Length: 114
Image (tube, rainbow, N blue to C red; front, side):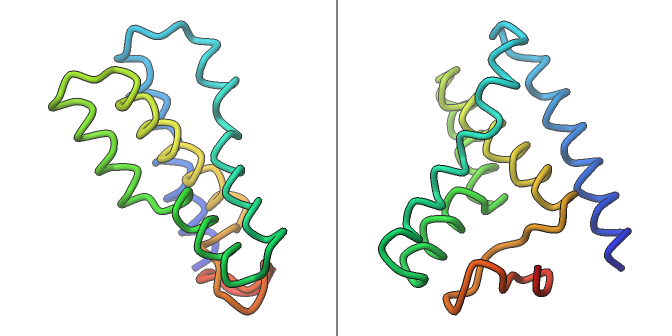
């Protein structure tokens, strides 16, 4: 099952690259911004509950897709880019086995323990 989830993450990451290629942004924006959603880990400096909430906010694919769609339909290119980056980053995390976090600790994810 883990390999299936990793392949799914890879397919989604490739989709993210494709979606980015449809934008008017220069190619170098994609690798430059790809790790920015990890700012969500800052919440762990306060406690595990806030850390899980902020991490999951920045790594939830549904939220990423919603932001992407809102940006697309409102013709807001930066918002579309934000959605693509959030989606692509989350897909990349899933390839490496990082899932959404539970409140009891960073290593306890919806994909199992790290």
